[in-house]
Length: 292
Image (cartoon, rainbow, N blue to C red; front, side, top):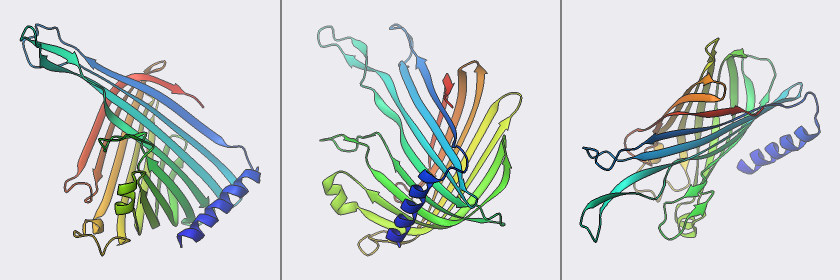
């Protein structure tokens, strides 16, 4: 099944190179945000200085390949670090002194998805999609740092519908069968933990631009229910049967020229990772560039 799916995607991608029904519609942006705090050496308190930065980029390319076939490819990148002051005792004076520790990774994401939609103009349209997720630096292992690792591949097929389709307001949802593969470049982990599963996936995406304030809100909800797992006979716990949920929300506004403020909030529930939901929130002020 997965090999047939891969062949179909390759054929569609090959055909897209020769079909020139209309030019590609490309939008791309990049942003860099900073947060900083510092305290004097005689500050009465235990607060410590911090410096954090996050770089993000989103590129979307869409084209109506033919009368009945549309492609939309989304490429998201983000990486950030946090530098924090730490305290230590000076070996000569015996007094406490502050120093800056090594930077620690705070954000790391690579997300590439290509969606082929068969525009049959019915209540729902069939679709095929392929997605690759990874990160720039894998720091889980003490003996070695892996670049672009681990990898998660997802292939899905089902039906999709646009409920709202306006330039500044959109809502779409899709549901279908999905297959996921986990791959780790660490040989020991790859031999012990490389697995694949399949199930049902639901994705809803919402966008609203508030004018004239130029406030943009984006939301993406992803729900996945696994129905089988390649390692289900060897796994002691059946956590893989739990529903996986990922909900991303971004609110951004341009304050002046290229100065941008953004709020990002993410909720993740994957029972195989942790028994409780995980939350991540970032609030930043930085520079924003509309490349295309």
